[in-house]
Image (tube, rainbow, N blue to C red; front, top):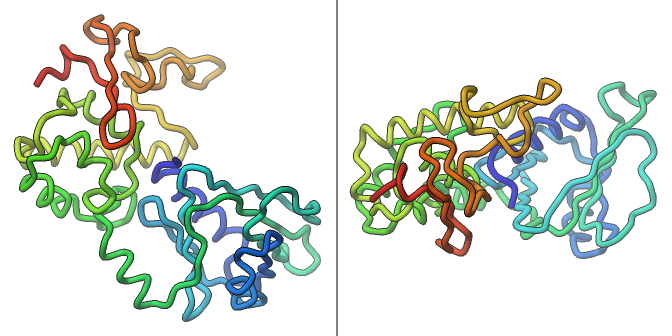
Amino acid sequence: MPEGHTLYRLARDQSLAFAGRPVHVTSPQGRFAAGAALLDGRVLDEVTSWGKHLFACFGADTLHVHLGLYGSYTSGTGTPPPPRGAVRMRWEGDGPGGPDGLGVWTDLRGPTACEVLTTPEVERLVARLGPDPLRPRSDGTLAHRRIAGSRTAIGALLMDQSVLAGVGNVYRAEILFRHGVSPFRPGREVDAELWDRMWRDLVVLMRAGVRMGRIVTTRPEHRTRRGGAVRREDAHYVYRRTGLPCRICGTAVRTEVMAGRNVYWCPVCQSA
């Protein structure tokens, strides 16, 4: 499932490509036909993200998209190709160059949610989400209030989007390692000072993810570069490194299912 930095980039790119102009909205698959007819030809104001949710504002109506595990966008310029497969929704626009420009298009496939919401419905949805480290003026102490009052393992709480929005399996594993926290530590044993460090680190890491278009969590001294880019095998400390030696202490990285996903940790660097 895409993590918050990916949705933030999608919102930014869609706003740049389509905002301020009418958008031709269709549903080649047919499952979003009613919503597409409601939005077709209307001017897109902007696209924003909150955690793993996208919100495209068309005046009083908002298109809400949640990609889930299988959703994805494909985009391009010029005349779009004939729809292939189950294209839930297609956008077409004149593009930044205006009516005489190349034009832009994007196709959405396989989302968990693709629906038109009213403003009150959007507000209720957002109210159920925790703070997003990528949103300006987002307050990390709101997440800590939930964490500090819970006996649930911090590794599970970090995946709860009502506690913290936008963090997925990669950021969960890596932020816990970077701060020496066992994923099994109860939330109530994560004090405010420790959480403040973790929150500020998440803000930095996720902003870097937006810039690079990928998640890199290792510090410069723990990675090498190939052609100016961080090698894929050096990008993470523990994520998907089961059985490999910890980059710090050499202990084999372990994994276990937690909150429906594999959690990765070093039993020495992250001892309970």
